[in-house]
Length: 213
Ligand code: AMP
Image (tube, rainbow, N blue to C red; front, top):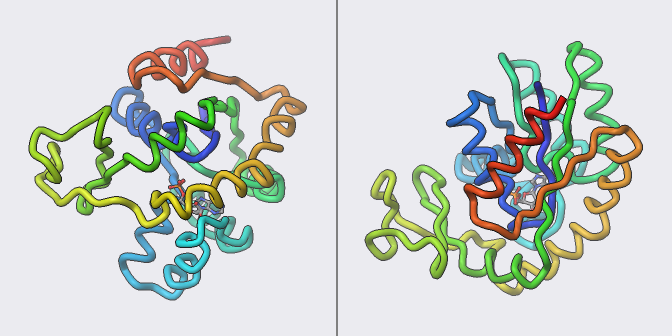
């Protein structure tokens, strides 16, 4: 079964996708990770995307759609789209791409978290520069301050997790991404989990949705 996870910034899409990869053998397609990879490799796409991402804005649809097209063409097995689509235009393009490769999304899972909790999560989030593992200055501290438990890499704050950028990301979410709730409801593919719980509890709810027939 192929699924997508969507929700506001900081809802836990990346964390839940990683759990699905390790426990249920999904392949993850994260547009945020692909874009950050392009930025760190200093590609042309990376420098284009960085201008939008550092301001908390969405990267233009055509760029992101072409990245997902490439990723989908190589995919083997069941996949999770993490952070894509983020606009109705992307969702419509996705339908076309999937038709072309005779695949479909069966569940669009919305992770719901109140705005106050999101801001706290984002501003306290720290990520490993090497492996991308996610920590939090209060709720998920590493054993050694500033050092990744998984690989020993340096923990840093993402540029777009700085408080000045978070507001803009929230605005982009409300304007462009929230309409996807209605979009997937109309398609009969909409499922919702309460993301304002610990990781394991949210994951258990997602598993219930996956087993739902
Ligand atoms: P994420 O890691 O999913 O929080 O994404 C980080 C940033 O990458 C977002 O704030 C956007 O600037 C950009 N981005 C990721 N996915 C998309 C997408 N599907 N459409 C447009 N921009 C995206």
